Length: 156
Image (cartoon, rainbow, N blue to C red; front, side):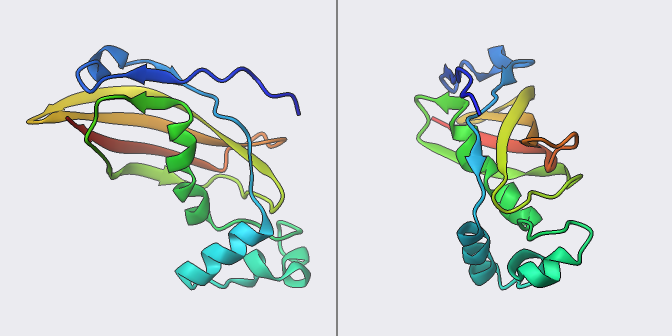
């Protein structure tokens, strides 16, 4: 897999409104390993065999072990950091999701990456809130693993 040139958008909190409509990514590809899935299962206590047991998972519609949907969702944070940097923030936080779907599984050993678009910005007393339409792509899959409209808050 050839590594595309990654362009990280860098801005300040005050500069976020000017980025409305800005595309983000793609991020670098990230390989989801069985060790990642096992660690997530331990922390979340979600031990569904389709994530952990290759024999059971082989008989599932997926044919192999797959990552938890919420593990995939949690990877948005480090993948987003690869494509967007707010240089003068003192605090950044996830504020929530307006919509979340998991159209396709992430096979263990598969690669994912993030693409996004800054859809909206809203001023806050000491910062900005942005709404980002995020897609987590799975290498070789026509369908994405995750689509979400996430809300992020950045404070100065």
